[in-house]
Image (cartoon, rainbow, N blue to C red; front, side, top):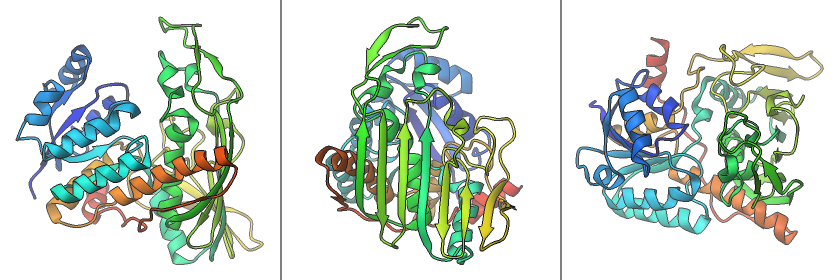
Length: 384
């Protein structure tokens, strides 16, 4: 199977880990041809750093050698770039979210079907060893029938570390759209599709200040355009009811909130899962040098015990979803990440905001299948 040639559009902070992984651990499956950004100096930096060509966005989209575009632009650029890439005859893997509205997401899926192309969106952390192990435990029936789930993202805002954080507080971002995809994608991958959502939301601190002392914008104020504390109650088709809380109003990092990032309760036991923003198992911090290597399982009246994660990708493996999709395209099979799940997660977030605004349940209109497990060939390469 030949390598898939890709081009990256968007050379900001997140592009570094993508390029690092795609040019090293995934180099047997992916060939990075070029990168582009609306700011040429930013693209030049990444091109020189990783030894790839620098092109303009227009040149990259027109290059017939590039089969897939990985879209790492800011959220407000996702729909436009995704659409242009599809009409250029290229498969698309996009950072989350797929688009800003469900209507835009539906349009992108329609275009992809018409053009016979693949499209999907991050996150791909559910393909990591931690959540893949959790999925296998749930599917085996070891915790019985899933009844309830909780996800907590209680944290300070990105102004605490980011040099220019205001875009995190614009439409299409905020704690729900920025971090919610990890929780909603993980729950969908573990439990299947959702059917309805109830929610409450509020912006407690509308005026924020840049707190990164190394930033040229240090101590400057900006206004949040989004709710900064959102609580959603999600009913899944399998009967499980989940509560997901995302908030940027606390004085600590989210992994120090004192609550599990994700937990599933079943009729036979409970399963504490890792931070859905990480690939490994439970760890003190998702940014520590050593990834977590266990989950916590409690059955009946037994004491909780640590359960080792299966072999798989433990380290930060951003780009894994794009690689699995590239292999699926070559093999003409479904990929672990899918357009339908990306659209479903987008509707879960949009539906959460609508339920909070209108003070009534939001009925889901999209659905998806639980994703296939990570490709065996990729797992073998990880073991090697």
